[in-house]
Length: 365
Image (cartoon, rainbow, N blue to C red; front, top):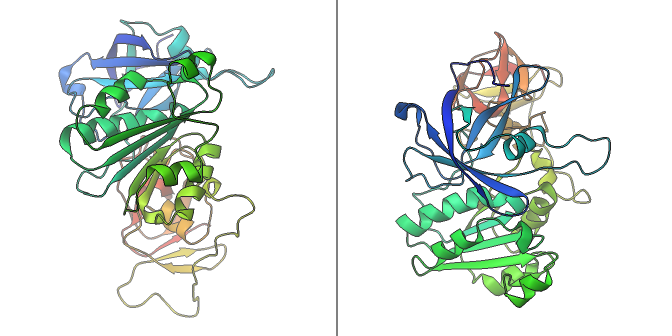
């Protein structure tokens, strides 16, 4: 079933479908009209229309695993998500891509989005840290760093075994493209063949000892992606090793609070003084239900990240203006969108994940 046409989405042809592991396939996508390809930054994702049996479509996000320099082509690398137990449905979109979509099929795709991007202007050493299919953005970043930079790079990837390890040959080739790129694979359950062919460097989980043995003391930038338990463990290890939180960029769909272990001390809200305003000329964010008032921080990426920095946990999912989960009522004031939403919010409503205040605002929170 083909999704209804939507002017925001453009038709792309699946020119190649490649099996990368027992659970992961790559799809190479070329636009039917060359002008529909848009540049992207390593780490960003595409939004794809997925048809549903009842009619209509849903949208899903998949990170681009190709290099930004590959003009006119996108590659997405997708894990087939099977239900963990009876009574739960398999992953709708991943199963459709794996089981139904073949070479020559047409997919409808919106432009690249996402704030998880490699900072090309930096000269700091880089740690690319991934778990499972979270390897997709780090491979795209590695392609950029191998071709256009002399920054030291540590590419660290964790997965269950060689059977599910995707893009390994590609990473190895990039490692030999120039000096200064180191690779480490950690397998949780290596097979006899993995051990015989020395496909991995450590067993179990990426540990503090592993990182200490690999990384000399330095001022790193970290880009990490993977399932929430992996991300939580890595965030704890990295901050425990003294890496500043501001140097750790991450991508996963879930609340940022998942990065902090459940038994850790809760983050305390930033102090606010409701007895006086934020100062003449200062932009403020006021929460109507609690009366709390905060002076806006211009360094904040969005209203969502700003509120999280105050110790709050607004609802969200995609962090990119796609899903609408962070939609809130704007009682007064004006906002501007730093990322164009997939759908314009209704009047009097605001998507926290991609908006900043253009004046002092009041939110119905």
